[in-house]
Length: 319
Image (cartoon, rainbow, N blue to C red; front, side):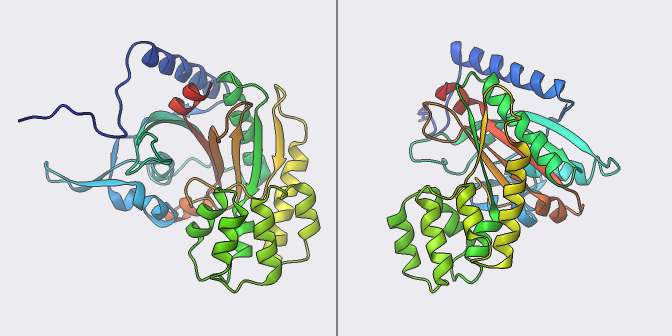
């Protein structure tokens, strides 16, 4: 007998919900268009090796793979659109030195990001490709700020970090990097101390990790720790401080920017600056972004790349 029970984590949208999503999508895509970003509509399906190659391998456990009955072999339902943009930039648009692309479409996760959350998201974002250094990062951060304002959030904040800080602190760890990012994302000193008890990290590194999750890893903390850990930490800290200093109070609409070494990526394909967007009255991040040059290299093209994305359902439900 057929069952009509809904699939856990997948939902229908109709009526006012569908109208709200299309309205917000239109406002944000118009914002991207005005900023010079051209829309790309990738297919829902990809080959698994394209989706998970190189730095994108960190998406593997969130990607649903199945065998195509039409004979195309194994196919993957996209769990993130950034690898698709990387593939397009490295193949279909390989002769373009700079690319400014935007997108909006559904993605599906093998399991929800948070307990009880949805497995389907309406991912919307931009990718700024071919612009090296802070210029690309700052341009994308400005667009992220405007997106939060367009979604109606009050007093948005961009917290900016750098994945190089964590890599420098745990470079001699026996645990994989994703173990550390998940633990730090909890922002619990007790949880982190429990993990550190299984390690033999240098005292300065262990102390810095605990301080990161304790909420004190701001600009002053970064400056105080330069010269105390290692050269890789100093390089990442100096890059982050320079970026925050360059942005300063230039964000429009009373959007503030703060350094926070504890900002962690959603997926581990980022290779430099990271940022997360927060808004008044919302406990969790409403968007995520950062630099991902390593993913472009994995797709066969050495190209600077920075982007951000958000889930329209998250924006609507949080607003």
